[in-house]
Amino acid sequence: MATQRNYWLMKNEPETFSIDDLKREKKTIWDGIRNYQARNYMREMRPGDLMLFYHSSADPSGVAGVGKILAKSMPDESQFNKKSDYYDPKATKAKPIWDAIAVGFVKKLPRIVTLTELKEDTRFKDMKVVQKGNRLSITPVSEAHFQAILELSRQAQ
DNA sequence: GCCAACGTTGGC
DNA sequence: GCCAACGTTGGC
Image (cartoon, rainbow, N blue to C red; front, side, top):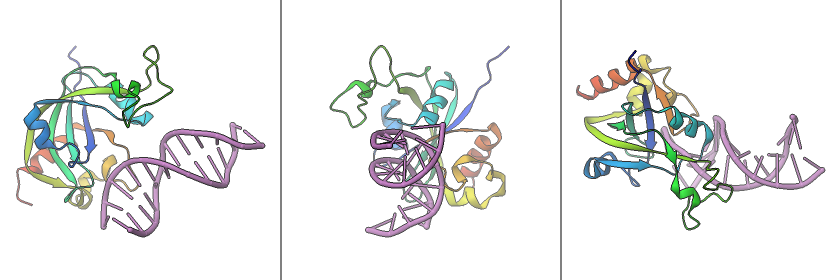
C-alpha cells in the first residue's frame, strides 16, 4: 500500500528566512524549534510530505510558497551548541531533545495568500493557523486546504 | 510597540 | 501535582 502523503504548514519570519531564501538555496535545515508539540509534528513528517511555507510577522502575513520534506527528522545540532541561541543545556548527544527537518524548495506561489483571506473564507475556518491564539509554528494541514490555497494563489485577490 | 494567548518553569 | 510568575509568539 502506498504511503499516505501528509501536508503541513510551517511558519517563519521572512526577515530571518523567506521563500526567496529557500528558492536560492534549494534546501534548508529547519531548526531552532523549541516547542514539544511542533517537534512531535516534525517526527511525524515523512520524505515526500509537502509543506506550506508561511511568512509570519510579515507585511502581509500569509502563505508564500511550497516546500517538500526531504528526510525524516534528525537531532537539531543547535541544541548542543553553547554559542547558539537555541542551545539547550538539558540536551545531550545520547539523549537529544529537539529535532530538525530537511526541507527542499518546490515553488513560490504566484502571490501571497494572506492570513486575512484565509480568515474571511469559511472554507478555512478549521485551519489551525486562522484560529485565534494559535501560535504553534508547525501544524498539520488537510489535502483539501492545501489544494485550495494553491488554487487561490493562482487567482487575483 | 502593545498585548492576548498560551507554553514553560520552579517553588511549595 | 498545582499554579503563579514569567517568557515568547505573532497579529494588529
